[in-house]
Image 1: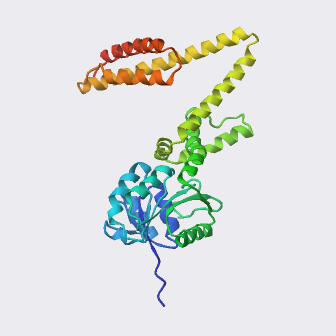
Image 2: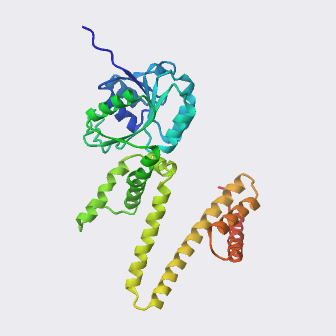
Image 3: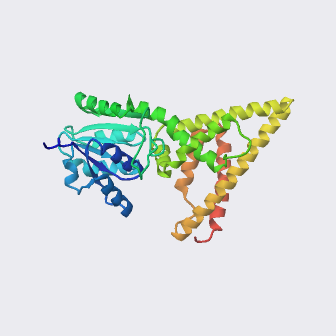
Length: 348
């Protein structure tokens, strides 16, 4: 008796998550892989998984197509494949950000194409993916579904399949997803990289709190590309960073107040701290303008840029409550020094 033919799923992308995704889907579906940048090791893995590497026309025979490429490539890929999709095809993305990919899915696909944004809230590290043994653990991990244009019965089948994998399925709008992911993903990956870079590592003295802090380090096993994508494409991450910085300032203020008995001493210490930051920022600014000067020299670009100068001043006037005359005088001083540093640079 012939085995029942499996439904076909096409995957674009075979990076870290693409490999895990193919391994998961391969148990229940006939997986076709399209990726023209397969390394010899990847080709060996496709044979081990018994995946079929499909060409450009063939990949679109799949009833479901999953885009497992970085978000920086997602928009261009959707535009490129949109005219090749057959009516009734379900197109999914697995980006860690949802507002923009979901916007692109709706913008570039025809009405007869079903579309849904998804975000598996796990990666190879958190799923304990073992590439040699092709093993993983999904129990109690989460996946977010953002249904955009999909039939209800198809959505329910997908939800049941994912639940059977012991995943917790969460339905959300793209905006709801990105609001929450900005904290638990974008900012946490950002914070973990900072702590690691600042060498908050193993030491003889420790506490439970310190160990919990280091527990975030499993995120640095993920690629830098993931960090870039979550911070550059999630519209809410910058808001979280700003909120964190404001909270840090409030805590530092309380510490400084407790350190100084007199109000005047506290004010002077505060001014000293602000002045130190101003000097550090100006030093950093002039280092960058030196590099700008080298860039301009190499390309024979003029040092003076009146358009850029006006943009900087206008933005400062709009954002600051300081006296406009002071802002103009302050920027004039900074810009004159910037032009001076640019003029002293060598070609690099």
